[in-house]
Image 1 (tube, rainbow, N blue to C red):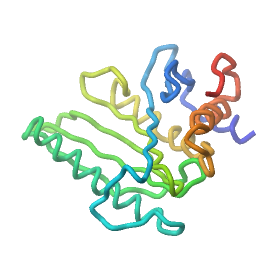
Image 2: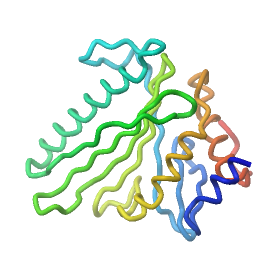
Image 3: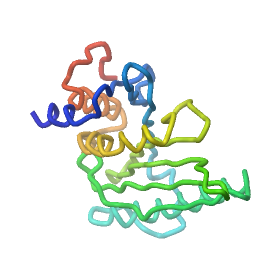
Image 4: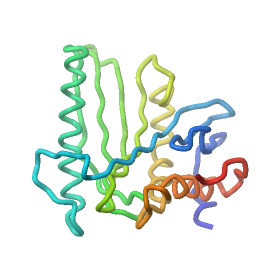
Length: 200
């Protein structure tokens, strides 16, 4: 099956399973936790974009691009307040299907003046016209909680994360159904072998 093919393309010794917290995806390498991916959902009515873009049918990507621009601006401002020496760089967002919805993948990083990596994040964002769906992971140098432990592991897993995000089924899902859709996609991605986690 397509899901099995995706599973076979994972790095050898890696496994993708739901964490105990259902909004987290746990990624393990040779039995050790390598990192997590976190899911967020925000009602569009709670998002106040400076750009006047309505996420109507056909304009979703324009709305998402505006959201990414403002997200980058907010992150850069936050990092400058925390440490004025950090250098923030971002990549232009790339179109990608996020659970069957038009979406964007975005990436940003912060480095020290000597080029040492402070943090690197990759996110996926989409909207169904009612909710903003956001999936985020990354690496913070020296911090092994909540994200990937090192940049090499994150870089190795990113192509497979792209595949997983596209396997989701978010189109038409209500907020109550999103956790179920997320866990179902993970089960399909891993060959359906995880029977210890029931959809929420």
